[in-house]
Amino acid sequence: MERNSSLWKNLLDEHPVCTAWKQEAEGAIYHLASILFVVGFMGGSGFFGLLYVFSLLGLGFLCSAVWAWVDVCAADIFSWNFILFVICFMQFVHIAYQVRSITFSREFQVLYSSLFQPLGITLPVFRTIALSSEVVTLEKEHCYAMQGKTSIDKLSLLVSGRIRVTVDGEFLHYIFPFQFLDSPEWDSLRPTEEGIFQVTLTAETDCRYVSWRRKKLYLLFAQHRYISRLFSVLIGSDIADKLYALNDRVYIGKRYHCDIRLPNFYQMSSPEIPRSPLTEHFRNSRLHCDK
Image (cartoon, rainbow, N blue to C red; front, side, top):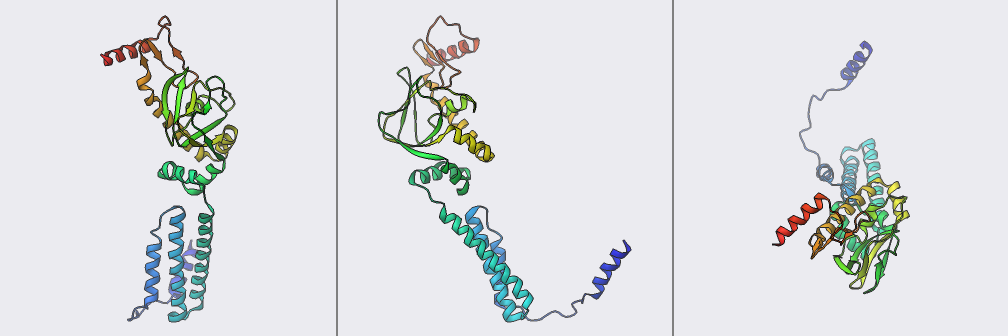
């Protein structure tokens, strides 16, 4: 402790104390560098935020280097500021190259600006998601999936057009752009399970959708937990929207439709099938509302 205290005491004693301050201010280049530093550190995150920060900090270090060369005439101050300027410039070029290299087709651009960008998803993350998918065209009146025949082996997101969902030929609801085509089927199966569609999905117009193969998407989830959580939220929200769309289809005449496009649910069309108290309560509530 005594050695440490004596060391600090010697450093303080040997350090010259400012007895007289300069009366004149530094030149405009020094003050410009300080302003650039202040404004530069106000940058945000993300690619464009980094471009903003490194561009202004680089200019600030360049101004400091010029000030050290012209006004102070100090080689060490000039060297450090010039080195920091070069580092900022290299970082700016590297980030600009990354931003320029990230290009997408029209469908992915629309998908990013409409769905992923509002959630704060960065371009590199979306690029990882896009590289694992493919864009597919579905012509009018062609089926994406057929009830009891098509296996559940992918996850698709509609970009343009409209899809009609039916079960046993009866209309359930529509799927509109930026909604998943098969989110209930996807959510109903574990990664090791297999299944088939319980509904038929038919294109009412010419459609374009982005599709991810099931195994490839699970591999992506294993490598990027953030993407896994993102899709979990998107799929959960999409299923909730479909449930609301089916709300008006629950009671039609004497038939009670509990098929919400999940294999665990089924149609109860026969009046003789025993119903749970919850079903009876829901039925009575609907009858009261219809009256």
